[in-house]
Image (cartoon, rainbow, N blue to C red; front, side, top):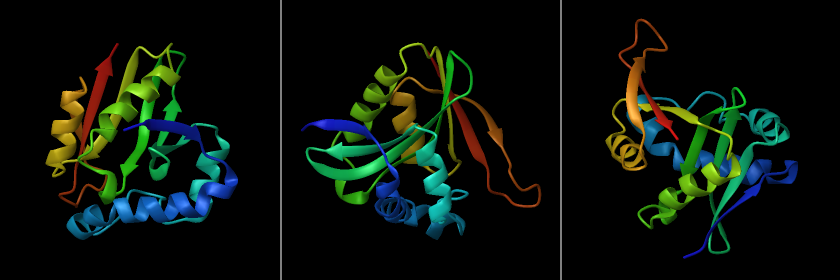
Length: 153
């Protein structure tokens, strides 16, 4: 298996949006919504133009995307990370984490959030060296929470 990252371009926006929606459908079914912005093609276009939205390939097939946001010279946030169902459970996620870390050799601290009931995500990120450091409740009157994870290099 060959995993590869490639920077997305504007022509990729529609297919990335479709893959993203497919990958996050289980979250929609569980929580009643998608991650903020991912339903909007303009959101994807804006993220692509920042130069930190990558296409994920499994061999030669487009399998998902990862969006990073460098917050300082030594800190980077993984804002969005998705792999469609057909490509899950193939060790692709672990390879992608290793590849994205190579793209930002100056980064000393990585961060991300993931939904509180996404137990597979929790296990996956912890296997990659991330540690849960907190929780966020985006809407005060809603039980939905996000777990905050960090990894120091």
